Length: 143
Image 1 (cartoon, one colour):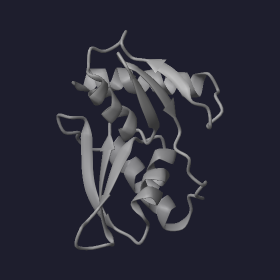
Image 2 (image 1 turned 45 degrees about the vertical axis):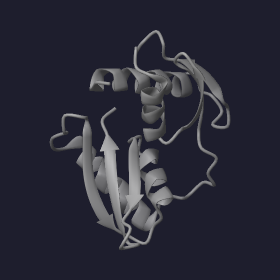
Image 3 (image 1 turned 30 degrees about the vertical axis):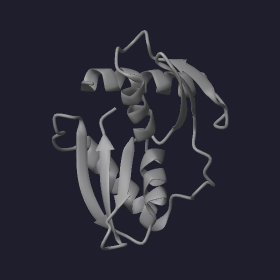
């Protein structure tokens, strides 16, 4: 899947959720078959990278919803991390996959970091280092 297809998938999701002013607890049926020929597995990876939950119905059709998280107030360290990744998102070069990766040292959980960065409108993934509980690997994705 190329970056153009990823972008189309992300735009379809954003248009559906944000332009239609849906309740965050709503499950929405979204069809991607008219905008991409990518497999359901590839589409699922893009949906997941946006921090959303999904259920594949096959044929490019998915139920998509926001994750059921308790709201986390983005203040203090989480706010600083969010602002740093906003700066990273808006500056510098993207790799050929439309990604930028970095690592940070923090006591925050991967879920808190992901929530904070997603709140800034940036799709990302966060992994914790196996040997150091404070080291987290963060990858942000170009929308």
